[in-house]
Amino acid sequence: MRHLLRFLAVSMCAGIVAAGLAIPVAGTTAAALGEGMSLFDAMPAEFDDRPLAQPSTLLTKDGKEFATFSWQNRDEVDLDQVSQAMQDATLAIEDRRFYEHGPVDVEGVARAVAKNLLTGSLHGGSTLTQQYVKNALINSSQAEGDTAGIDRARDRTGASGMARKLREMRLAITVEQTYSKDEILSRYLNINSYSGSPNVYGVQAAARQYWDIDAADLSIAQAATLAGIVRNPARYNPQRNPDAVIERRNLVLEKMAEYGFITSAELAKAKDEGLDLKENVTPRGCSAAGDLAYFCTYVESAVLSDERFGATPEEREETLRRGGLRIRTSIDSKLQKKAVETVRRQLPVGDRSGAAQALVSVDVATGEIRAMTQNTKYSLGEEKQRGKTSVNYSVDAPAGGGTGFQPGSTWKPFVLAAWLEDGRSLGDTVNGSGSGYTGFSTSGATGGTMRQAGTTRAMPVTPMGPTAG
Image 1 (cartoon, rainbow, N blue to C red):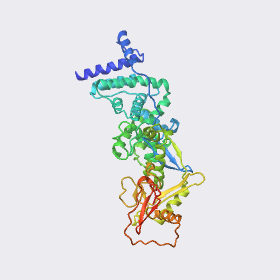
Image 2 (image 1 turned 90 degrees about the vertical axis):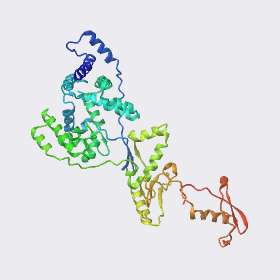
Image 3 (image 1 turned 90 degrees about the horizontal axis):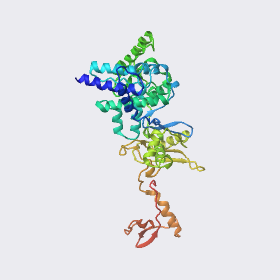
């Protein structure tokens, strides 16, 4: 009875789809077709195909990349920048008749119905276009922080799962009316998660992370590896589960040979290969910017506080993480290198004295920063360890700096200037043995008093910035 009910439910789904596509189905009455058509047509057909998230990069004055900000590690490419082997592997394992059928593969749906009936397991019969729709819906929901929308896009259970499937089918029609088959395949290859640590999205980023090559150069074995990951990115992570990935890759290779994409000789050769990973993980955020980490945080703060990048802090964060910005900064790579060497030669990182030193070089004609460094290693959450901090000593707190330091000897010139302005000379002496000193008070930010040998004199107090010292 349970299998029979499943069969009836899936058959009804197939019948509605067939009606919506105006495909004649034997044994279906005109009334049933009309009702199915109405139900199918009533489903939303608008497709929110928002741009995929693209990483933003920071560049030096001479064009060298030194930091990347991303929500998803992706580098979108056109289909002609993807190897034929990668395209073939994807079609072989996901939808070999992609270029032959419409947005919904009725033959595939029928095959899925039969498997559902005979095995009791769930087989979707989704086309590659439907899979792209599903991923696009998830992508939109993730961008909006809509966890319920993500769950709906992944639902595989009961009536809600059936409704989700029908929605995908309806939207697949819209997609194939809007884009060519090549465009859909290209979008599919760019939107997929290809697992990894950290996760990579899109075939180009995956090729870079696993083998340090472009997607155009993927071999048959490499292409089969990536194509196999898509089914379950969490399980098929090449960096963590190589044995499971190879087993899945070999299944893809067998499908490629079965459907004529590769020869038996190519199959044998590819199956004999290992994963042979040459990992090249793309660094993300300021913690990966090396000696430019502190300048990186300064630039990040500037973007997040600039309304040209969005009306709210959240919108500016979204722009930086997803907008694909290329920000060319004023930093001079050669001057930065010299600045780092000079500062650390004078006061090494982690020096036992605990002293800190910072240097900023500014072009006096333009105000542009050419170099920024300090004798510490950029590190989050390790401020208590000598030589490690995330605080930028060269800027105020809103730009990534701290709350400042005691002025110490920096204060002496101000006291001396006030002394000379009062008509005293450098040869005058002060009896410092008295105990009448009461300290300074900056109340009202107007000045303070100092009592010396029973005499009270007005002394100017100059407010110091938070980085004085």
